[in-house]
Length: 320
Image 1 (cartoon, rainbow, N blue to C red):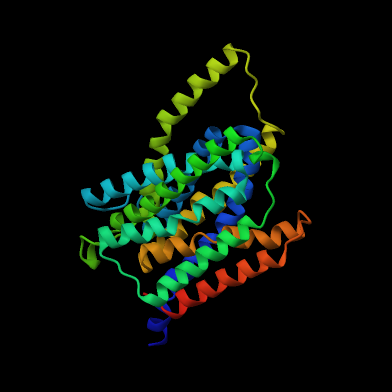
Image 2: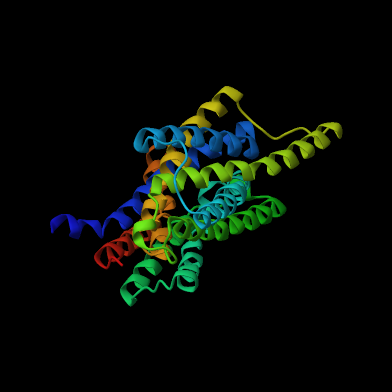
């Protein structure tokens, strides 16, 4: 009986855990992208994640390839391409243009998109307290990020606009990718007995995300050759070795553990709630910027963090 009661908190807890992992990922991949370029980081992190997930799946199930029906493969393939190939490519590029915190501000809109998609596609509805929790959490995240002064990366108006558009694409794709992942598990169209586990779903999703990066890499390579031919220098800084190290650690924290945890959240909670609890990175970044970067955080940012925590509490008190 006690375990059954605890089961209802698996989804919310996994969502908060995902946010903690995304916090580390945003910092690691921002540092890596400045040294290697966004496209290189994206294809490297997906490649490493596929290898790690494949080995994990083999150890856990005894099989390299998960068993599933064709429709699940289609949903998970679309989820990988939309959420991880296109969405993350846009998001990581926006990190470089805007910095991780401003990009995460725009990403805070993704739970609203996710809730609407969950309602339209899976008939998921949230009660009033759950909506209040979502609103408080998103409001707290927005309040936290807006407190920070404009940084140098967003000073150029054209560069900032480019970053905002890319972060918006990332927010929409992330919400859509999470919904497609939940459908790929089997929610909304397959009986519970035919649902696949989240680890298998993560592996399939990641593999197709890796395939989806191939045309992006080809297009990027062509553009880079054109830039070199025209004598345009790249804007990368730092050493390649450091970039590879940041990418390796970020790959373990993000696409390996983080994506897996996000599917656990989506599998055990409505998409809107799961996406909300997966979007708390700006709040978790606060102690890091205070301790590591010695930034002053105003009472306004502290209030935003309290609002976000209050929203999280409501989502735990009223699990769906």
